[in-house]
Image 1 (cartoon, rainbow, N blue to C red):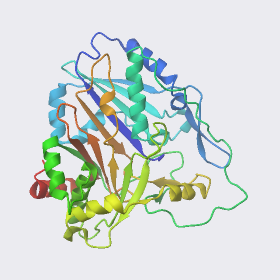
Image 2 (image 1 turned 90 degrees about the vertical axis):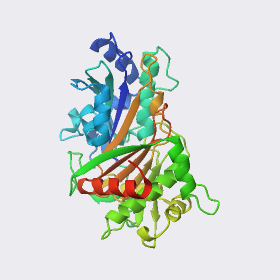
Image 3 (image 1 turned 60 degrees about the vertical axis):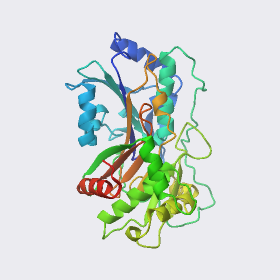
Image 4 (image 1 turned 135 degrees about the horizontal axis):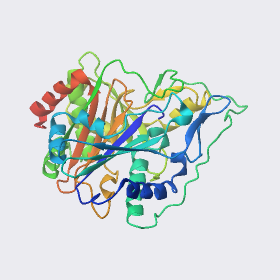
Length: 390
């Protein structure tokens, strides 16, 4: 996951940060970081070249910014162009100097109306979206003078080669990952095209209607399965020469851990034309015919002691289920965010689709798609004409 970055943006009304100085905000960050020492570290390499985090208390990067728009104006602009949200999070990657590159950056952006956004740039190598949400929710507890219900996590980092005398069985790379690079100390993958994000919301009423429409022969599908099936088919229609018959699914694992990369990563294969089937068949594939590839991924990485570079998101068309991410549980001075946006950077050309919980007052789900720029308008058109999604 080292070539991927998670971006989270929390939008607060003016009461959350009213009267606070920069020092006030930083003081709470100092306390928070006591519970996440690995986040304060910097990367080094072993003799074999495998990267590891040296816990040297270098900290996270703190950025302040101002926006000339009100928060309402900004959120309205995002309906037309979701990609502008990238300006609310730092855009720095890890490298080219590993010893000086923070793994976490936090940006506080003040809007014209007095509202504030808290933008988190989180190196995915630290953990998945559930880990990032835990980090932010713990900050809320620190601000409220509550003792976080977690132990200080002193990660066990391996600084020596993990090769054993028994050679690992050579096998093909799993379908869910793509070998790239090598990227060296500049942890960024290069795309063949410009990627663009767009998002739309589905409220509870629309979601119920949508699920009933997709259900087949008494089989009920989750919101993630139903929405993913429809979007899969719509993308297949706009890629007639490269129909995505293999897709990757990332979702919360049954282990229920909040630290590290613990997502269940699986693949689904269809042996028939995607555009010609009923979406319920695709939803059924996602529900019943996915193959867990975590063990294969681990073997592929261990083959050369973790030195090779891989990508997950966008290696195939990737559907990421973040419905259970507790992003709206982050409170700052008893104020909850009015809106939360999550997205991923470092996505390869096949693209990714994220399903997030919607704002509590609206319910439903928020869908974020990151795709090649020239496909975005076509996908919007397909969703609107076939499924009446704006």
